[in-house]
Length: 425
Ligand code: 8SE
View 1 (cartoon, protein in one colour):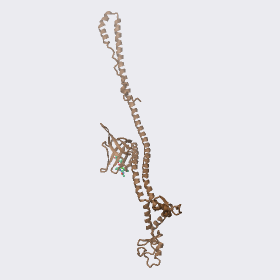
View 2 (view 1 turned 180 degrees about the vertical axis):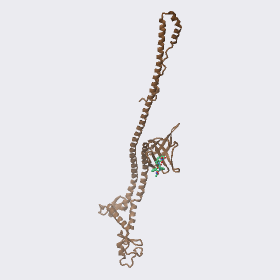
View 3 (view 1 turned 90 degrees about the vertical axis):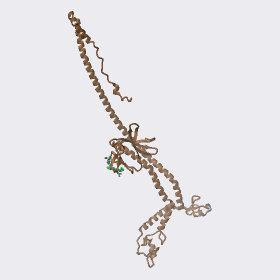
View 4 (view 1 turned 90 degrees about the horizontal axis):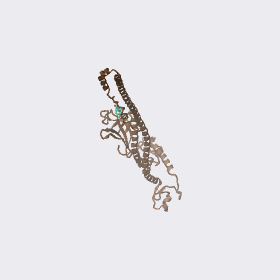
């Protein structure tokens, strides 16, 4: 693990890679598919990056990194089965065969979180880039000139007004229906007022597209007029405020313009001036908006992180409980094994002692018999008989002179049974 990095999840799984040519899954590391390894997702909070790491055990140097895979934006994750998840990164398909469905869920949670964070950091940039280009094409100046061009295109060449019920001639020119009828009245041929091509029909068809365009345009214009030209009059002259003085940065009427107060000042019509000013304000707003987007991204990341911390805490708690359950089970079994070994040793030692004691009892009986026999000899009045047996008696006394064997059975070695149990709880 690098400095500052932390493991945000730990699971057991086998890492696999889909071999496209041979169309089969192959183990990504050398261990082989049968063994599960430990995987971590490491988070670097400085760069806000994530990587999947498999740590294997190297005999001498300790931990060795076997897989080191950066979680990148655009990675597609798929939970194929409860135990098998896979992902695509544009180049390859990877798979993780998890030890348990719980491991799979833990991993999926963390990688989903990581993907949200890594794609979030970038998407803000792309989004603002997109918005920038939109803004560029929508500046007020552009807008005005585009509207003027559109108005021109929607103007009837006869009446120079916006088309009213436009009809289409075969030469592809359009006119208001009324204008054309009027134009043709009293003329011998029905020709196009613009190109003079004779029309096939006396009743040319409606140019529906143009009609709709005109309707929309007029509607739009009506709306914008009603919102823009709030009829504010000049306080000094009572005239409409049609101009904007660039020097004083204030509205002006035609009289203001010619007045002494504004001598030598530059004026713009309000529509143009507002376009220009709006653009200026927009330019100033740009960095603020970018900043807001950045803040928003960071905030989103905080929300994501807060949520993920909750999930992590819950998952880790489950893992701790699981491991303690295993530990308890191991301890229970170890306790039972040790007690069984102790009981067997106790029984063996008791048996041995019983055997030795029985032997000793037999020896004591023999000895008592011998003592009694010798004492009988001593008490005898018959001197001849005593001396006759003297030699055998002496031999018998000497024979039983052997000291009793000391206890030779070892006690229970308590240390042996208590080894490694001294946890000092
Ligand atoms: C092998 N599949 C373990 C693993 N499956 C080893 C086995 O021997 N094995 C579970 C099964 C069938 C299936 N791919 C896609 C364990 O049992 N689609 C999936 C995807 C991808 O799964 C979707 C985002 C990213 C969305 C991704 O379809 C495992 C079934 C498979 O890219 C064979 C076929 C399996 C469960 O692999 C390559 C990815 C796939 C898209 C649109 O046999 C295929 C894979 C190839 C084989 Cl990645």
